Image 1: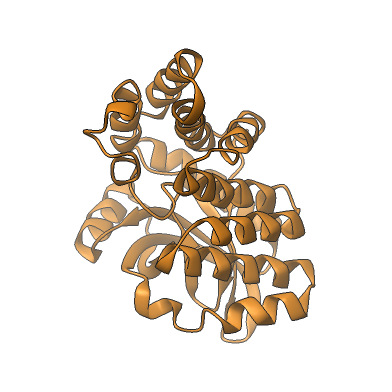
Image 2: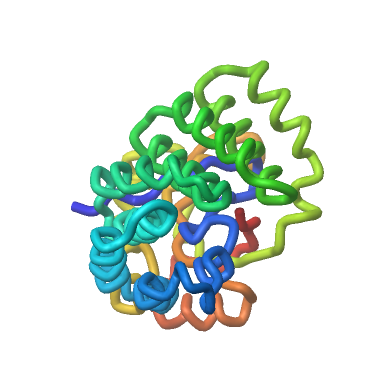
Length: 257
């Protein structure tokens, strides 16, 4: 049974997106020589054909060396995440974190942090986000550091959380707005997971998902929001919501990491 992805938030801000910080095309450069053999995997990933992306990236990884090998491992790891194969994804992402390309290593650490959160290890996740922040630059580094703060907070390391969150108070001003479809808010995590599985099943018919279980606080009450999809504008999100045919859903604005 597929497990929904788990992300951490402050208030109503959701830090999400498995592409993580940039499109794969922008990261590798579609016209670069080193990315040529990987381009079919990148194109498949961005088109939502994750099994094809995984297969193509694994093939490229076997044929590559050095930085190209770690790039292929990163794309294969992201694809495995989308396919709900966390063990395989973790192995590939850990390989990618050793890339000599700081951008690839940094983004691989962000993805690895997401998996570690899902596995219930927020402290290790925070450390992965810290490594990402050290490798990345500018707003990408700020977002990774903010995630580290949220993960430290979840781990009960309040001082470490405070320091990192204080350094990223202006994150909202550098984070582009996004929209998602919310399927409910629950104080009981098991009910949220059940709802996420239901929404994921519906979403597969429209090639979106899986749904995410998002720890958050609403009007002073801690709980879990169930959300699916990542849209650049409200119109696209609303059209997809109507296609889902679930009257208990609504569109809400989120922040994209």
